[in-house]
Amino acid sequence: MDKLFPWKNIARMTRKSTLMMAFVFVATVVLQVHGSTIEEYVGGNAAIGGFTFLAQPFLTPDGGPWDHVTFSFLDLTEQGPIAVAAGAAYLFSSPVLYKSPFTGTPLDLKSTNDLATSTEVSDGRYVFRPSFTLLPNTLYFLYTDQDLISFPNDGGVELGPNGFRYEASLFSQFEPADGATNFRLSGDVVNAIPEPSAISLIAIGIVLGILRLVESWMEDTKEPRFPTIQSPKRGN
Image (cartoon, rainbow, N blue to C red; front, side, top):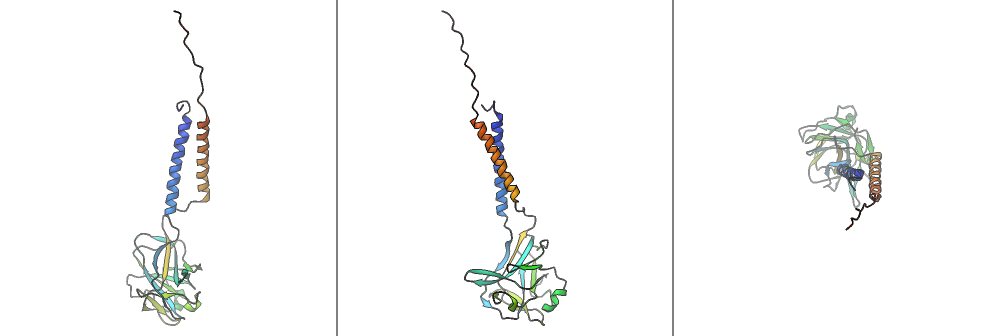
């Protein structure tokens, strides 16, 4: 049967190969987490006073680099952390933890030469331009130009017992202070496999459906029957 209908084997093998490629494709996409957390601190519950401008240093981990970067301060509630942000955020880098790479006041941030400035606030997050990239194992400093009174949720940013931050008033320079703020830094690993389009997934489904129909048609096709030829009887 298989020799008479080789297309049946071809359809079966092609369908299995397509299934395997689809599985690898989907599994790879699932492993890629869009906007995954790079660094996070949620150990604080001490409130910060109003009219305070914040700056938070953070050290990126191994891996990366990351683009599509977002940053948010966190307000810890019974329902879970709530992202909060206001104004604009400015990123700097420095190899020295306790030495601020920016020495001006919050009013000076808009005219400074920083690495990147947030382009908008979305869902309580500072959003940076998609092409901006954070490097691994690098110390960054994020400064804000809006005081906590302007933040949603009544400020809503707490301090933890570990780490440190920088604080400033409107007309004073940022100075180091004990206790890190609750925050979350997120981004995408550069050169990760992009998310599949709906067209790609539909195309895979169509191919698999056609191959299954071909295989089913081949299975329903019966082997041709040939008349049995009997040898003539010989006389005794």
